[in-house]
Image 1 (spheres, rainbow, N blue to C red):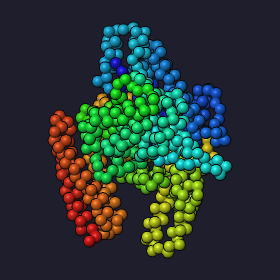
Image 2: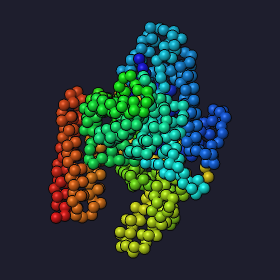
Image 3: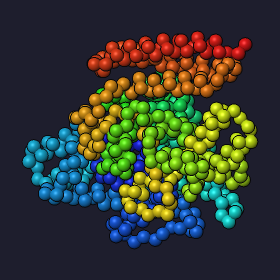
Length: 601
């Protein structure tokens, strides 16, 4: 009877979930940390070593392979501390057994292990019998890590470019691979063939005869085609993708990787229909690859999980995703930013998040990656940035350089949010002698880039009283649009009760169904893209926009059919859902007519 939650906590920023496993894993909850910022990771490791009186030896940047070693050391510490908390939970006396009771209280009511625990209490089993049984059946939540595959900047030593394995993503992967963790590596932001090939060097990523994989591979994807391509690519190297994690293109936090109008519902349905085919196809490939490489082959076909995340906000939505699409878990991200027992957010930012409305949460262009980024208006990092712009000194120092990926002006890449880059770009802009309106628009597009490397970790520094010499203390944060409908700081028990329908912590605002919210976000995104064209469309643009529109219309038709057939589901909102779908369909039809009138002959 495995203990099992049906949700996971996705990665949020570089710091907000960096120590989340230490807060929730002993309760059996899976969570994901970012291993991008080894500077912050090392500072946090020192903080926890001091707190728990563990000997600490600083890993400076003068030590060879310091980035990977910092990550390995932190992950090992995190595992050690979390396992100790889990051990204490299981060894509690009756009088001190609050944590053990909390473990079961927060499980879904459908959990068989929860039912068994309640039965033992009813049958007046001894506390020693309960502890003995719990020791055999309880398990920790997984301490998973995330790598954005595109953040693979080259590194230098004494002015000389280092070998590829010292690139940022490569070193981070090595740091995880050499740790003691038995968990998953989540790869996001697209395919990086060089990084994927590098995984071949580490035995922990390969299955044994029983199908056990110490370090599992999870691919974050936005469509089925991408999953199949990446799964086959890795299988040819003898590497199995244990989970495909589907994320909404726009109804999510952090960076938003929009699809070409493909909506989450139809995407999930394609995975549902092709799940067995995907597993069989990739199993055939990996079996041959392992045999050719003279590696151990599993006795039975390997299994895979399908999970999803992005905008879920009610227990009804949560359970529908599991029941209808057969998902193994559902990710709850942004609402957990309002749970101090799970995430690390400073009080000032927590207050702004709790008060945020729809108008305060927007898709911005502040990311140096050049990818749309979900942002909170009035965050303290953007306020710092605006002060610098007003004083005539736009741009930031670049102490960490994780997003230093632009080589437009330099041999060694720099960040587009850096003072160096923006100074060069503005100087170039001024030489063009543009009309004031055009100049201002271009100027704002340059200076709006924000130093996310520092901003996304600043809250962690504040909470843990980590000293820094930087004058900048501003916090960047990246909640998804779903944050607008939660306005109460919650306990861990509160949020699990909400997820499992035992309580309701929505703010009472008129919250649309998660599928409708994503649909509207795509409609707004499409309108903004067409406005950016400023006039007539060429054939390539027309093809893109018409394809985008067609995909959205297909999605609306799918939803109309889905909600019509969803017996005993969403009964209170079916009519309003249907009306909104009709409205969006008519809007898209008008949009198609407008597109055709804008096309060049």
